[in-house]
Image (cartoon, rainbow, N blue to C red; front, side, top):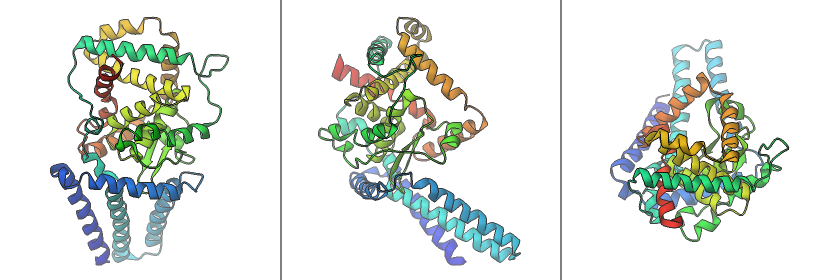
Length: 356
């Protein structure tokens, strides 16, 4: 029993030590840690790719069932304090192993160099006029691409085969990897959730990356417009891009070079949303004025996506957001869940460097 507690304490201490090293001495970890992480994730993802479903889902259920069942046995068989402590030691050891594996395989990438350094992109502060210019660019591009995607008789977005999109997203960084090494790594298809999709919908998650199985997974119950972008976002995590705002920007880049019009539209749609929200915070009047201009399809798709997610808002969403916020801040993403929208700075810098 004591050995279990001791092993759990050692593994937890090593995990926290690694986080401290990443936070205060990142030069000691990078680039070797990122290369090791990418190498291990590539091997694991190729192994788990042979399973047609997201392997992490049944594993989570098995671990949870094991913990709950063993506790019930301890209580039912009246094993007393000693039995409970053995159960607690085993549970803590399991949690510490998972925590250690998380940091060993991927978690410390949160402390890695900024994506802007990897891309040679200068990201700085921008004037309100520059922000407006970038918003209009992404808005116009998105509206133009909105006319190229498949829709039903009511004008709603549709998709024929989600598996094709998952395969496309899995290899979406191949083009970019030739120019930027950060985008190299596994190209196996993204997977969809089969068990936890409803919970994830209520929790507000459109996708998740699990390092232990190296699986980038998407919630199939997401708004159609978001699916390609979300898949590329989760695939970006598999490329060792841990920061949420950087994964969003990476997803835009992957979508923008795709030959699939659905991916290009999804990428520019999300880019518009990001920079438009930044403009709204800076000048709500200017943002509202832009919104009233002739962007009918874009407004329609924004409304459809909003209506889809509104059905799942509630206490579960708020609780999950707090948990996610705590997780992100514990890995030095100071903005927490707000970091998902901070890709705007990258998008503005990319516009002025590439498109202006």
